Length: 156
Image 1 (cartoon, helix red, strand yellow):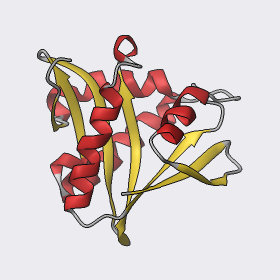
Image 2 (cartoon, rainbow, N blue to C red):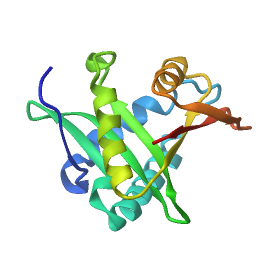
Image 3 (tube, helix red, strand yellow):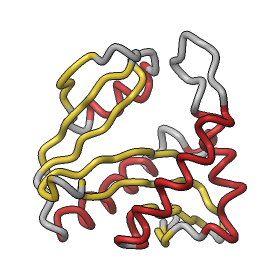
Image 4 (cartoon, rainbow, N blue to C red):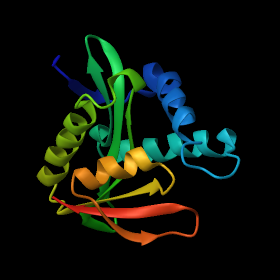
């Protein structure tokens, strides 16, 4: 498999691409209409705050000079031993080929190095492929949330 490199997300050059990733994933597993306008700008504001703490907290995955994925994960400010993975994305043509696992490994190394002992995430319960992926990597469902999301946790 080709070498995968991760580098911090750069708002000036990566925003349009990452916005496309976000818009592609918003409706997956959703029963209702999703308003991209309500999601996009707040997401990038949150990324900016996280990157203000450490630029690596939102990183793009690059193969052969092309951005092929994204990892947005960070220690939670009020509980730094716990991390939250807000977004994981791999372009459709590379899904199922091990790229997502390699991105998660990168995130694990980063977070363990920062003292995290667990990672939490929210995933739409209707996104069966993602739920199965996370379960395969050891995430367990903590709760079924009213908004249709599952809160999952994995020990590091």
